[in-house]
Length: 86
Image (tube, rainbow, N blue to C red; front, side, top):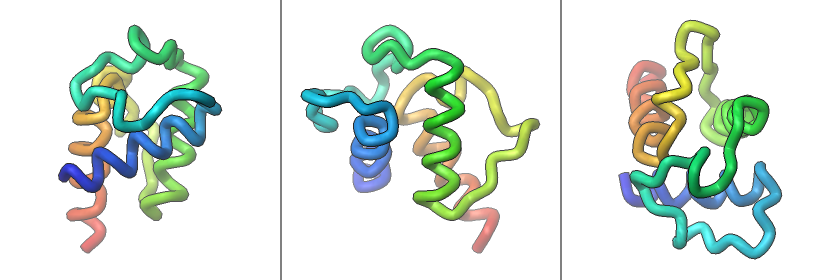
């Protein structure tokens, strides 16, 4: 899961144009809204990036702001989607 978390952090920095932010500085349990200013619009960008990067589909019913509030939450969601697709 650590590799997944690292990849998600890299994607966050890339997708949200967080120039100057070291992906390693993002804590796995940090609230992304509070620490990085990720709002609902940015979350949709993140979801789109996750779909492309991991070849998963995020359905409307899957979307829950709490799930996407932390790197750990996102990683757990992605792992769940990947295991369903196997």
